Image 1 (cartoon, rainbow, N blue to C red):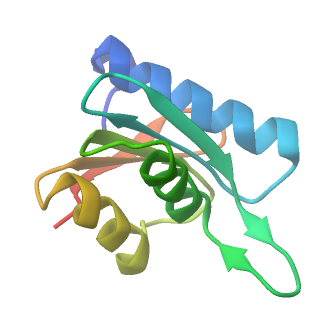
Image 2: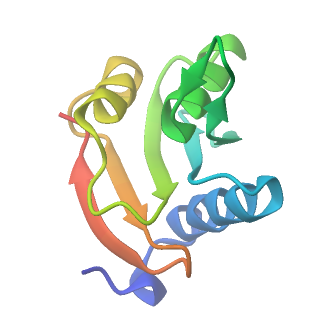
Length: 117
């Protein structure tokens, strides 16, 4: 478990943004990623009959669509105990294997930080 108060302020920001997206949209997950310029992209789970994306894959897609060249960090707020490998792969594709992925519970407490790789 990671002490959320010890997080870098920029990492704390993406956790807060991910938590807000989850709550605002009433979805199972919220996610946020930070690109190489410090811009953030925030998303919730997409669950349509013809399109299903996790919050993290949606946030990565938003970053790519906006011209991001790399990622510095990613955060997911969920009740899940781990970040699925498919989600980490999306982060790795844009940010590289060492890009940190933070997993926080609905209360914003970070339970796990893992590299995308």
